[in-house]
Length: 143
Image (cartoon, rainbow, N blue to C red; front, top):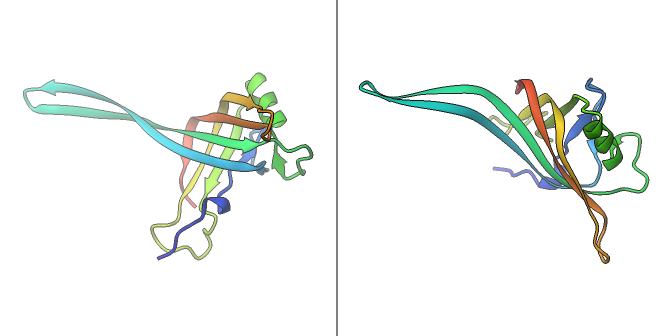
């Protein structure tokens, strides 16, 4: 059995909403959250539960980079997408998809909006940013 180190995982983003993905700069941590709203009714037939459409959000923490490469998404890029309410494309996938064994392959791709973005600085620390991206529309989980 093998595990995947978090350092191998990236968040890929295209701030123009297409499929020209770039990697989120200096990613420190992230989480991918899948949720489905439910509604339940108590009846004489038992509890009946309906499930809504799935939604995905990605939360992340990163360190600002003074000179991001052309293949990196920076705080400035995400700030512009947030302020301009730009629909962006997001992809999070198993970093070892090729040749991965069954049960370890995962893939999330969706369109969404930057719904929060926080810039944090402390005197003796690097300038950091954190944020959330929330999905809209269909979520692709096929590799």
